[in-house]
Image 1: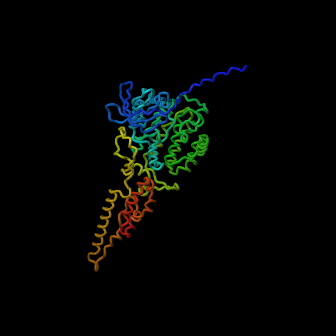
Image 2: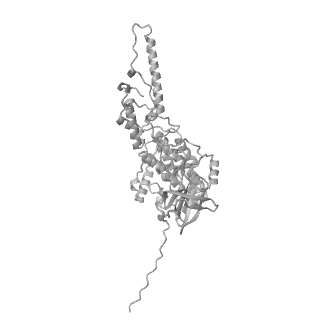
Image 3: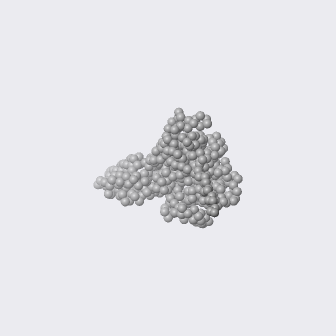
Length: 490
């Protein structure tokens, strides 16, 4: 007799807990528990497994941001939990008052909850809308930030982390994509967002778990995270240090190994063990290297369960971020004169010129449209950097005025000498007269040559299209100049 066959086991199909949210159509209205109505706008990004839309509160014109995910998803649930616990407006204001800060780069919660969309329950979070992401700016600048800009972002992020850590939480995913600018071109008012990996860390235990290994963004995450530890206070500082290397140099020693987390982890350990030499080999600017080194030192000297001493770390970074950075050649040798710095046109000058509108009060929130990512490369630079761009109208007019004044003085001088002389003394021709030096220190010969213009320090920092247009216009303008006048600076 054949044994009876057992019926096949029924397997319960598990629901995917990390699925992409159903797209909510623009115009859909969400009412929160306080009877505030939010109108969903266009989707402009996806974050993790959620969709990110613009939105407005009914009766208001100011644009906000709303993040939407299926209610079963974990990431947004975690982020909302962090917002509810540590990112309420009154908590942020209290910390600012305590530290005497005009600006603190963390977002505040506006609304959150669950709503029904067709057959699905959706979770949402409403926060302020900012101008653009640091990653977008970095990409538009060719993958790198200037040293001054990077230091300004780092100082702002340290203040943000100081607040988060003071509330006993960690962020665990600091990176340019999670850093937003309140105003385009202003690196001093950057905001740390995306708390999807945020975690209460006051009760951390010094016990790694391989199941948690490599959590975070692989190329930036801390060595603790690679080993399977929960996010730590010191880990956030280490992550910021790796980001600074990328912002300033445009790369990381392990960036090509991103698909192999174990290899990335080993390279990071080797790099950290080789400090400071390993850092100085890739970061040639001594000020930047000193600041990044300070971040690594702070992380290494802090125990896994302890908090970082921001009282010692912040002054180092903040002082450097507000001090004029000296230009250094590719070899690392230093130029010390201010006139040389102006002639070299350090990249920060160009980057700071990306500001679209006049600088407003740091307390004023942004209400930029969704096209605000576009950076106008032709706006004025910061107050710290004198305007010295090639072809700048005001600079050109000033130089012409200076040349005219100098010429008049020469003519007057020779006329005096001619009085009483047996024969008249000739006044030198215009081609031989000394001309007033410009702030840029760039000669007419250089301006007339497209090839030489391309080699002008700082020129490579312009986007290729903008750079070509600038070079062509400038070379055409000066191509017809008197050849003899190229000996003077214009």
